Image 1 (cartoon, rainbow, N blue to C red):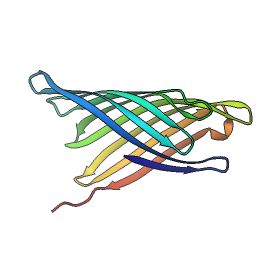
Image 2: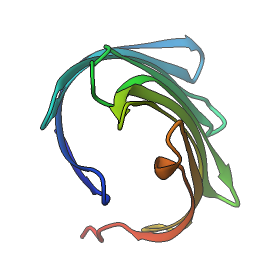
Image 3: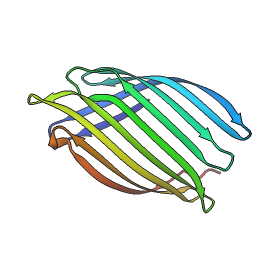
Image 4: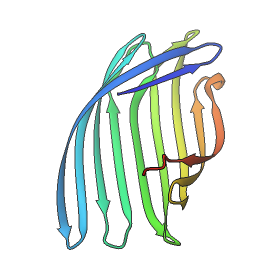
Length: 168
């Protein structure tokens, strides 16, 4: 279950969701393992509800590499901005015996009007995560949203250091 909260001068929204998925694991060759998944998500927004269908394909390779591709299709929601299509791809590989993960994603959301103008958002993001130590990751990324209403355009770099809990 997920929750999020976004507030701008013209919008305020709270969203919850619940997901159900199933997966099939298989091996295609020696030490190359795959997972195919399919699932559904029900999004509960203050103003609407939406069903989404997701499919994914993940692979673990014998050389330590990992890849994943996911796609989501959302049903139309009249009068509300909602995800219509989304796709993401990730690649993880060992670099200097530490994990480096590169993730790219793209999503399209539409269905709303603001002051009579149709709104559609197209969001692209790229992030790189490098595990500098056992419990410490450095994250750098960039997200850009191109909206049909300029107020919602956004371009933001990001940088963070992520600390994972220490386990005894």
